[in-house]
Every structure is written in C-alpha cells, then in structure tokens.
Image (tube, rainbow, N blue to C red; front, side):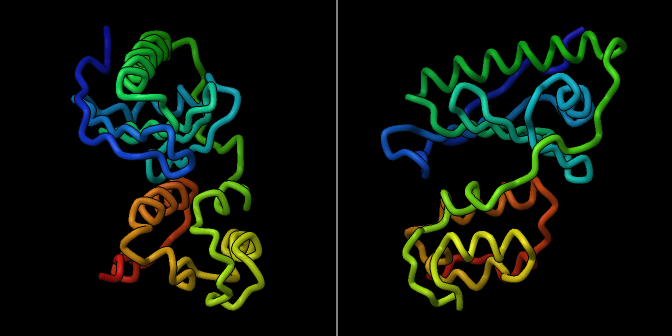
Length: 187
C-alpha cells in the first residue's frame, strides 16, 4: 500500500544559497507526517523535529525539507531536476511506509543545526546593527539563544524575504520558537 501518490508544484523560486540553482516547493496530496519517524530511522543524517513534524536532510548537495503536506527542495539545477528528485523522494517515502513494520521509528535528532548553516542564509552584510561583530558571530549567538532573529534588521527587508522564510523554516524545524507577529518583512 502506498502512502504518497499525488503532489504538485506550488512555487519555483531562485535558490538563496546559489543563484544559478532553484528552490521548488511541492504540495503533497497525502499527509506524510506519520512516516517521518521511520524515515528518520532510515537515513544517516537529518534534522528531525517530532513535535512540529519536520525533517530536513541534505542529499547530493540538495537541501530537502519534509512537512506533513509539503516538501521543499533547494539547490536543484532546474525545474526538471526538482521533479526528478521529488519523484525519487515519493518512491523513497512509499518504500519506507510499506516496510515500516520492519523499522523501529526514531523520534530523535541525529544532526544539530550549526552556526554555519544559519550564516549561509543570513544577508552577510556584517552591518553590526544586531550588536555583534559580524554575521557569523550573530549566527553563533542566535544558535546559543543569546540573540533573537529580529535583531538582524537587514533580514527583514523586502529583498531578503526569501532568506527570512528559509531561515525561519529551518529554525522552526529544529525547535526554535519565535513570535510570528515579530516575523513580518518591513515594507
């Protein structure tokens, strides 16, 4: 029995990490939340958050985030590449779902978010408006809970809207809490 049958492209956007690549967002026709602990048990590295039902992994240089009804794929070469990766992911999810009785689910995190992961998404202006020396120091402070994302004012400018969305998704996937009212792009 298959779990994931249908999906469709919601958006194709430029990739934030590599301007020559794209980011694809797929809407799933089926809820894959129940299979995520089994996927987590079946992969080597991933950032899994059971509470929020999110799983982020890196495969062949692509950053893939799974949600109950959505998948994002960053760093795809083009839309055709993103579709191929999504089809492979669909098959993988179904394979895990079909063999879940043989897999012990893993509800824990295998990989922790690193400051470098955050830094790569920040605008990297080194403006010091946040009160620290540079953007990497801000990423370290954010990760350690000494700074709040709202302190990076360039991140909230319209030109960084996609960066903000991606960073919030990654932080949320790893359990970072924020006030959604504070997370609006300044027009």
